[in-house]
Image (cartoon, rainbow, N blue to C red):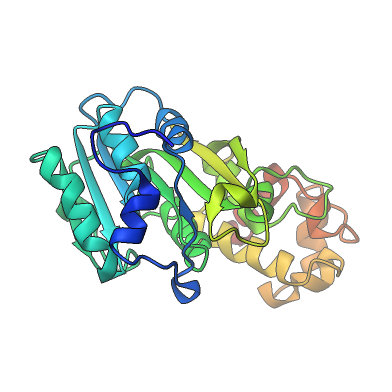
Length: 280
């Protein structure tokens, strides 16, 4: 396995620093620098750009981001065992890598980086979905980030890009595609990781739309979508009863049959429901 920066191969790094992956932290290390470099190139030209990385671990993707020309990388790592390995990377890229020990759910990246920011991360499996929903639900839009390039379990990635009518179409698909262009940029088998997870993984690339696909209040839309898919086997007239009022009349009024199920409703339909509720 080659190197891109004069530092040791990643297998040597994890051996020398005793970095046995912890299941409790959702860790699966990607050690092939050819693969991490492919991921680092997905956002496009990073020359001089600010990059936020979550869960860098031993720093394979970190090294690739810096080698691809990222101006500044803010790496947030919860596992203190990884900090010495990341410090080694920082030493050969002076002033370009800042490592924060902490929980990504509690760190405000704008306190350390100026927008726009590219987010590139092999996300820990146990916080990936929550982080994505937060990035998709800022107080204002367009967001502070210019792109999201995120590794997920393949099942989660497929849910993000799913289309109406399928079993994996759900809340994540609606929230992501309402505000972003989303695509799967790379698929990776379990054996690409150490230790190999039980499932395949995929990298999803999202770019924010200047405006959402259809007008709707974000909070109302999020509530409608959550309610609809929490009881996805039920007809909408039953699943959305908690919204109050005459649900059947509301659905009929926006052109959706009350007997439809959530997985059959396109994003435009959910936005129409949200607008009708807000108007009511």
